[in-house]
Image (tube, rainbow, N blue to C red; front, side):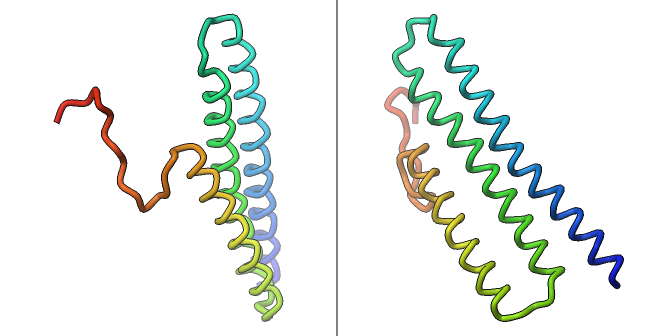
Length: 120
């Protein structure tokens, strides 16, 4: 059983590293894309930068939440570890929702508005 815990801890660390790398490479990709697009006469470059960066942060946060859940499942289930996980998940979920509202301009439970150019 101890070997199983060790394997899960290593897997959780790998998933955590993947979340961090997702945020990092997403930020680098977004910034490079923004710098390349500066030569063009687009006025929405900044908006595209924010959306691209926000998407990579959002995906990275979701992966980090998965890693935290793995750590808690493997660890001895004490009340303090469950409370700490709950607080971490609440904070990251709030950040994820805030980013999603910032990116889409609406809450996830609100219906999408149709563009005026779309035909019904």
